[in-house]
Amino acid sequence: MDSGSPLAGFVLLMAAFVIYFTPTFVAAKRKHRNGNSIFLMNLLLGWTALGWVAALVWSVSANTEQKLPSEIGASSDRICPMCAETIKRAAIKCKHCGADVLPDDNAGPINQESQSPVTESVEVISGAASAAGNNALFVALCSGLVAIIIGAIAYRLLPVANVASHIAAPGTFRASADDLVILDGSAFGCVSATDFNQSLFHYNQSEFTAWADRTSGENCFHQKDLARDLRWTVLQVRDDLMQVGLKRPTEYAKEPRIGQSTYWTLARWASSGK
Image (tube, rainbow, N blue to C red):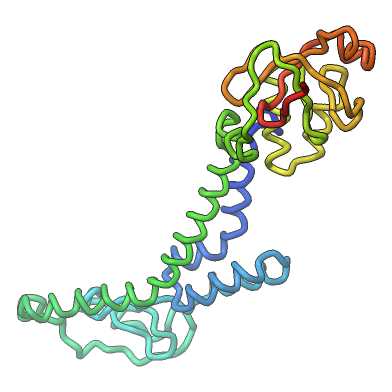
């Protein structure tokens, strides 16, 4: 895959996005209580190595959301009073924090059938509302960031054919075949329409290095480097493009090298040469 192709750029951009926001993804996966703060640190300070590492370390810390009592196996499990992690009722040492705890053999199992449907519904709704409140900002920020990235990629991948319509407002002069025209001082042209469209795309995207690489060869010209009073003959017009050449002997004599070929350029850069 060509490293300069739009697809390669898209793949590299997505890979960089995933790597950059790894701390945020880890915090979301672990349902971290400070997921929003981790996301903001990742977003604002992740470009520094220290900020990215700090966000990653924070995301793997033990400060995660705990299960509701109704979600824990009440007949055999309980919550450690020291670290709030789930342990067995008969345990005398917490496997998570290592704290010594008293066994809870006297506590009988909770009769799940005794809970009314209303109580169960309230617990489920309360848990869902709490989770939604903690993650709403995180989801909104992530969605907005992804939308911005996709929009930027889509803008960069717009077809070249759509670029010419945004160059300049059309003038009153409309060139047609056999007309003599003078080109604007900033105009340029290429032997093939494909080369011109590619050069024009780089020019409109302010990618002047790539534009210069394409237009610096013998197959293109810059009007600013030619005689100011040079008059081109229009050979044909296709929408916003026109093909021109130095067909008049007087004009050919001014630029013999350029006169050996015909070129495609923008019709909007032309004014009457009569």
